[in-house]
Every structure is written in C-alpha cells, then in structure tokens.
Image (spheres, rainbow, N blue to C red):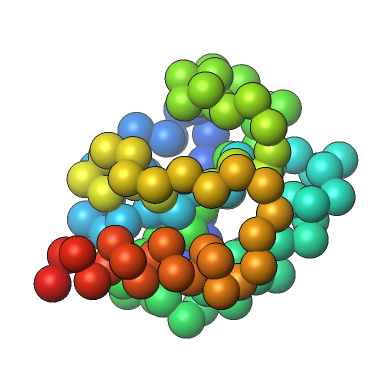
Length: 112
C-alpha cells in the first residue's frame, strides 16, 4: 500500500477515520471479491494523486464484520466517504475511476 493508503480494522477505525483531519474514502472489500480486486489499482492511483487532500483506506469485511455491519455494508465493494467522521457519500459496486474521482472532487470543492 502507498503512504496515503491505510489498512483499517474494527479496532483502529474510529482513530483513523473519525479523528482524521482529511476526508477518508473507505473501501469495504474482501480478497475473494473480483470487483474489489478490479478497483484496487484505481484506489491506489487515487491515493497517490490525492495525497494530502484525501486518505484512502481499506477495510476487509471478512476480518472486520463489526464496522462493516455498523455502516450497513451489504454488498462489496462499497466505498464510503467520511468527512469529520460523518458519512457524506456512498458508492456501491465497482465504478470507473471517473465516477469515484467525481465524488471526491464534489466534496473537496464543497470544503473550499
């Protein structure tokens, strides 16, 4: 993972997401999920491109069911964008880079 990508667990979720001074895009995924693996390179590229503006995080739903359940994640991949610890947008399913980036830009522009 890149410097701007964080691996989340049930234990560190609150510290790394709710307490973050940057928006955090959390990828709820599992290793056995082909669409999850398909968007992984897109998320890595976005993490590099948006370093210092948005953190990208991954949470394995199989290993961390408590957090996935708390946010009602029923299908993966699910991407949830948090600002100030609050959910501000949700993307369900594998989406092209332009769609994911559009969500990031919309919420970054709102902060200006």
